[in-house]
Length: 162
Image (cartoon, rainbow, N blue to C red; front, side, top):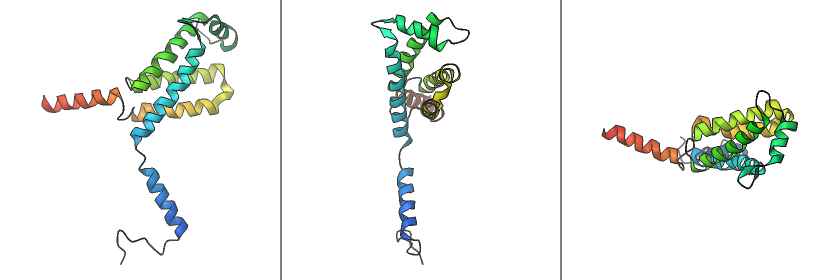
């Protein structure tokens, strides 16, 4: 008769080791994954936003890129450069502190799709990697280490007491 703690000696060692490794990976907390996803993708967009600035204003070179290289349809290049610089600073900041995280992730996902479709369609492996982080945050939330989690806990507490 097998016990819950005794290893199944009929199971080959490599299979037991593989099962133990998978069980260990299953214990990685989603809160940790969400935190790493938030900080990582925020850094990508923040750095991109920094390249568009000259001090506290959008640089002429950023506007030039939107006019001559990016050529987004339906959007004035000056406006697009300013909106991109703003978005690449606001949404990463919100992701880092974990406020409005799901909506920030969706905004950056939309930006990623625009970049992929209209600007750099051959960069899909990079954009796919960004999309995975952003989709995880949008679908699963920012995790325990976020202002969103604090707000949700307070809202639950108020509902229970009120």
